[in-house]
Length: 136
Image (cartoon, rainbow, N blue to C red):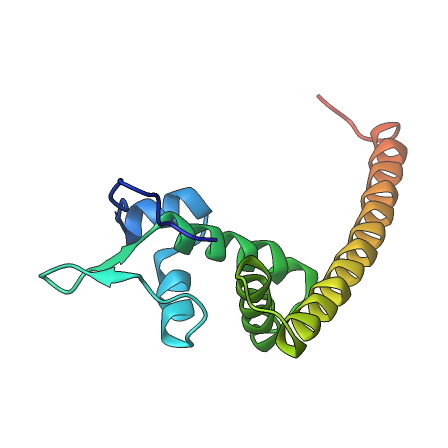
């Protein structure tokens, strides 16, 4: 998750654009900054938060984890683990990061199975009720 492209400048976005791109509220993005999950890469001369594409991608990881019941600490650990795996680091840190990502992957898959089952039940109920619903 790196923004550095050889020979090109990193584009910075203000929080409103980031909120639009991530479908998170400005308040939520500020909260994630306050708890240290995703800090803006820079601040403008006026003190406004400025975010990079990497910051946006980190926020999207969080947005995907939240409805699956991951805690803020687990979100932080996953982001850190992904950073380690994207780096050239090796050894015990890398092994621990890989194990945590593997665990998160398994949990996400299980959550998907449960959600698919819930959607199937909801569709069954919707079909049942459609036969009895009035549409005058």
